[in-house]
Length: 157
Image 1 (cartoon, rainbow, N blue to C red):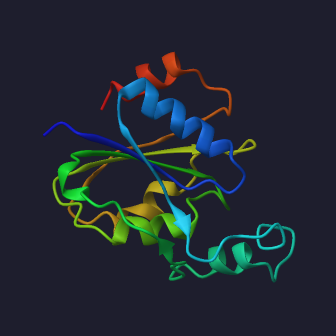
Image 2 (image 1 turned 45 degrees about the vertical axis):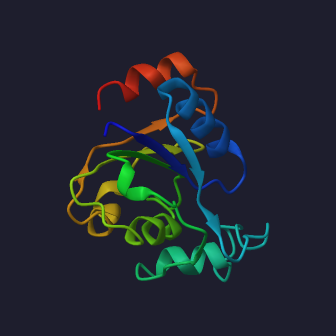
């Protein structure tokens, strides 16, 4: 098989650019994880304890709905999954995305963007959603990471 997918959730466009560069650097297919109910600026206000994103991140069982699915997920054996770091982990919509599929035997590699924090407890939060997969340690990248840098990192998997 040896088919690779770059799936990503991007709230502000930063992760989208990085995911596009990673897909180009690796020759992978690209899939955007789109929320069924789009996030507004107010939803993303992490300073507001009543904002949607804050409530979702406090409730580890929260699973925001995803609009659309990867039509042929069974054809991929390596999945890079990208997202912004929220509260030192992946946004719960990433768990929703992963839980939609049988990931048995697939390699799942997280990558993230962040204003400054690292990957934190990301793998611990994603592991239950990756049953049967080989979940690798991911990496946080700067928004301006080059295709060369991304290709070198991705080649380890």
